[in-house]
Image (cartoon, rainbow, N blue to C red):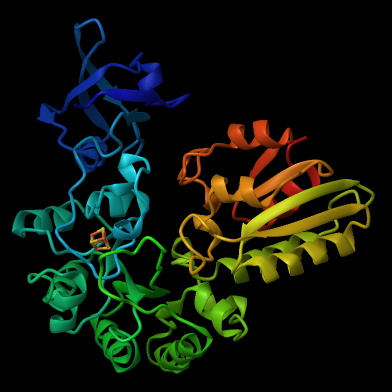
Length: 436
Ligand code: SF4
């Protein structure tokens, strides 16, 4: 149902008196099947929009607008249509390793190119028939994020638990040769797609040309709830270093040959191995930042630039608590020390939260839950505010994975709780003013 949830302030929809609760019936006499349809059909200077008002009345609105100006409506279901479910049974699937009794939406395994385009979700391309392929190309659903994992057909079938998963190179070729930009992901699993298989995958992906824009390599995540599933190994300091020793030389060759390093490693490989992070420039445009690639280097670079700008009152007095996961803890301590060196009256305590909820092998900040915070941070009495990275919260929500909200934490600690954005300026300003 194309039921409208929200009208953006100042938008065409607001001007036309479209309201939440109204139903979008058609645009230019065509039914709007999903959000891609909406984007495609509204890309014009004159459109006719048919709306059913809450009271049942039908309105036909003739709209003159800029070619790419959006209507400014959001739907109860963000992609309008139901999301496509994945048809795989991946050996490393994180959803299979979730504890029971979490919010039901967390167990939904989507594999939908529309969500990839709109929200950056990764798709495997295993459930696309000819028509869906055509639609991606015709409607220019680009860029899309593709979970490749390996280009070895037999290995991909085994890793994805899907006998139709093998022809990934053919599918990628079809997209990229038709102008669709693809950012690829490899979830690296020791003993499966690392070592020579990783070299093979990178060597084959790079042959697809410029529209295969980048490859993110991220390590498998293993929770303590991995019961009744195939035994899998995680990465440690030695095996992480082995991955870096494959990818860094590959990056150098790629840079010389095609002008980009092409493949980028998730921060976890550096944190686990102790190998220093590459310089800021080596992440190029930070294309795969959302996938945990270059987050720490970027934050570090930006915080130091903000501190060097001398734009704040150095005499400001604050005491804050910063919470993070085990992996990023040393980096955040170092950043906090840099801030305190510039602001002598600012006191920052960084606390690492061990992940008891998912198990100790999960060390990223993004999977820390309120349950663990409440168990491990017994008091916040002496601080002015508690700062949590935005990655601990579900997209555009103030709720963590275990449904603990900012309000819950504020009630628990009787202190302001601040969600800190990803930029260096967010980090510094949250310390100085957050929760005031
Ligand atoms: S594609 Fe694989 S990893 Fe993703 S949800 Fe499906 S089974 Fe899980």
